[in-house]
Image (cartoon, rainbow, N blue to C red; front, top):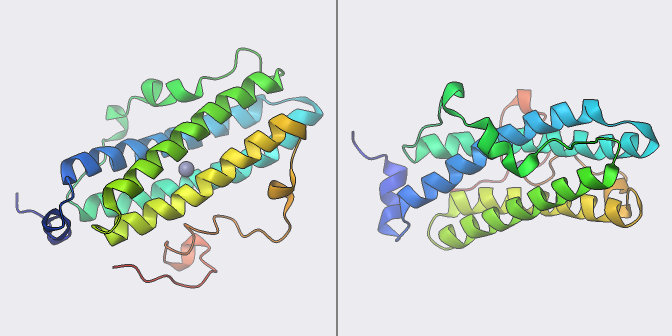
Length: 198
Ligand code: ZN
């Protein structure tokens, strides 16, 4: 099969495209698995603290869904494909996010969420390093997602410290403030300014 033009351009710049596609596909699958995980988890949470954590999880869940949507087109542009649903090993992707044995133990839940957030921050940082100065489009995308993953990490850390913190409660925060600008189309609630990335 002929190589995509996008792939050739970044190969010339020295990107190992197979390695990059492997990382992007893994993260897209992880984002989808995370969306699934958060959907189940929010139904399990109980009590006052559970309610407060549910608000954070709903926000992170919506943003992880956007991360999946934002990654998909770039994977196809580079000539990659996503596994069909039967080919996604949810159990292995979800091993980061094991459902808690006791969802009323909010701190067990938070430790799981913090570990997963650490993993995402590390992996998107790695994709930024692979593409910086060589693949502007993937770099901009990974950096936008990274900003939001760091916010999720801060929300969970603040919650572990002293309940919902000032970062999460910051009024007027636009959902998906970084990735939302990269997604185009009226059906995606894209209210921010357009960011042109080539
Ligand atoms: Zn995400």
